[in-house]
Image (cartoon, rainbow, N blue to C red; front, side):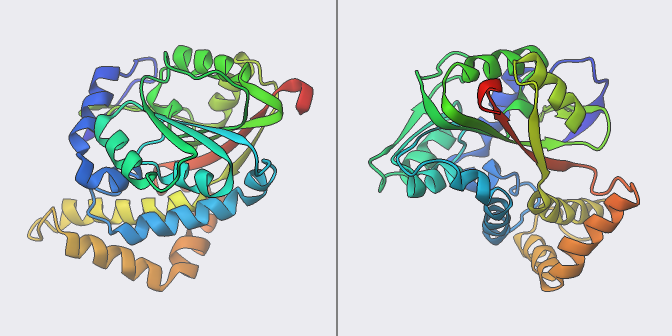
Length: 284
């Protein structure tokens, strides 16, 4: 799918748009959570989402029920629906037409939720918002654009409000895949540098172990494809078998193993994910 390139090279937004456009509306939900290429079942998405909500439950509870929420890069609307269940007004912005169609279908029962097809670099709605959520957006933006958007969002925060980001990361440095899938995987320190440049001198972060659980399955599928080539590369059955086998011993595979490897500074799985919370300096 991709190969690494040097960290000073920039991603091509045309390639990013083409990738998500090709995902198609029939796989929009799994593509939004990057489970489609390894044939992982929808249960993997539901599991990850439930654990992610638990990870930032207190951050979400700090937002007033009457609050106004902006979901940037909302994908198929998975998190937009969570916000619509909790808060009085939600706006989701997404560039991929297939994702927009899926999100509008999902959010149809929620009249307080609006899905807008647009470019987050140009189509930001006026604030103020009580919560602004970026679910894997900055990883598809080059540094100058990420800083510019965060600066614009800072001016759209209500008093005491926050920006929450969920971004795929690496333990050290920066990794920028190229080919038909392009992204920027930064480490936590590089994200904090971007936040400071955008006017957020302090930030909170939490490791997203729910992402790691899915990434363990992804890495095992890729290993099977590499070494067991007599098996079909594309197989929903094998994808589901891998996922449910790992879930059967989740205390070991999804909890203990990642934490032990992290403590030993073993970089596996290769990719991590973190939640960040930014608040304007006057409310920090």
